[in-house]
Structures are given as C-alpha cells and as structure tokens.
Image 1: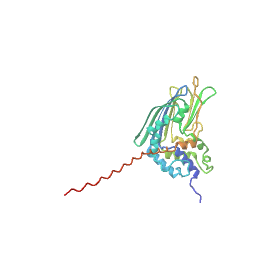
Image 2: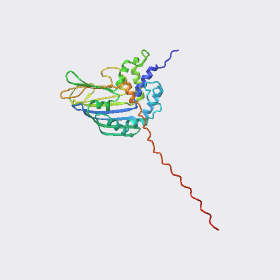
Image 3: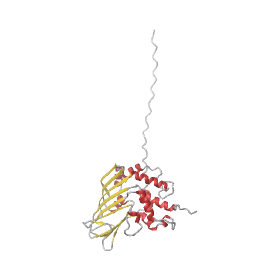
Length: 304
C-alpha cells in the first residue's frame, strides 16, 4: 500500500517558513528618506492580529515546529505565551530599548497600543548610515546597496531574505528531492496559515531614479513597493521580479554613500524568533527578626 503522507522534510521546511512568519496576520508599512551621505529618517507601523498569531502557534505545534519537535522552528517553546511575546517584541518599552541599543540610531517617537484584538506599534527614528538602518529596520529581510561602474547606485531588497534560495531549489532544499515537494504549494499553505500579511515599503532617494521595479512617484525620487502574502505564492517564478523583491537604481552624482549588505542566515532568523529571556526575580531583603518581648512578672495577688 502506497503512503500518501507528505514527506517529513517538506513539513520541516513549511514549519521554517511559518515560524519565521510569526507573528501572524501582520501588516507592515515603512517610509524611509535617504540623504546624500547615507543618513536619513525612517518611520514604520506594524499591526499584528493577536488571535491569528495564536492560531499560527498552534498550527506549528502540529507540524512539530516547536521545541523538542525536531522541526526547523525548534527554538520556539511549546508553552509560548503569545501575548507576552508580542508585548516583549512590540511593546513601547521594548521598541524604545531596541532602537536605543542600536548604534547610529536616534529615537524620535515610539507608540504601542492594543486595539480591536490587534497590537499596533509605530516608530520614528533617525539613522546615521545604512548599517544603522539595517540593524533597526531590515531584520529578516536581505538588503544590499551597490555602487555601479557608471557611478550610480543600486539598492536591492528581498522580503523573503534567506528563505528565497530554499524556494528556488524546491524539494532538494528540503531534503526531499524528487518526492513531489512543490515550493509554490508550500507558499500557498503558508499564506493560509499566516493570513492577511501585507507589506508596503517606500524609499525617497537623494537623487533621480534611473530604473526600478517599484512604483515611481512624480518627484522622480520616491519609490513604493507593495505586496501581500498571496503574491508570494508565485515567489519562485520570475527570478528578478518575483513578489517580495525590490530594486531601484538611482544617480550617484554628489553622493557619498557607502556600499552596504544585510544578509541574515536562517540561523540568525531563528535567534530573532526566540522569546526574550525572563527577567531574573529581584531578591527581596530579608526582614529583621523581631526581638521577643521579655515576659512580665506576674502581679502579686491582692491582700485580703
């Protein structure tokens, strides 16, 4: 009798994608203004659906993607408290701390609130260069700024980051070579698990844009890319213009930008998904023992 069960390696790869998609049902919008010397300002808004994130965690448990399950998401504790994780990741104090600890970043404003079952977090900050911007904003994405032979610059970003090559290799990347693993089918499953994931990224460059696969504004310098998880189902198609890939080439006269590359590995991403360590309990000062009272001598009986 032939088994119709999906190969275990495909499940492991699916768990990887889903784990890195935590938190679930996320909407992310960013706007960055880059100056001639590589410094600039940035703002972003993240909206996370709490209930959808909980559902995604439960699904990962079924795939063995939690701690001890042997899956690719093995660093995620099986008893994860999603609301505490989101507070520790997107709470106001956590966001401010992350920005303040990033060299070259100046915090402008941070807010975080719970509304209608969603966590809504907003940040505004200035950065001294692409290294600071990458540490604060790119996170799971890959990004590279290159200077071309003609003096122009090309900025390339990929929302799928380290996961892109796994899609391109299909079943071989999952260790299931020739076992019927379909990367686009896997992305379809991830889309069902993650839900309404949408991303919008806007860059205002310091010089005129020469070429881009994004939407160019009338000013000739501002480019916007938008896509949803549904679009990523075809991410293994056109290698250059697959959804999630962002590219812009702009003139370089008078610019002093330095080449930059941000390329986290799957291991790096797994570390990012780790829940923050619990704060050690503050030891309490032992109370000073009270001195026992000296017993009083009995009063003499009254004289008759």
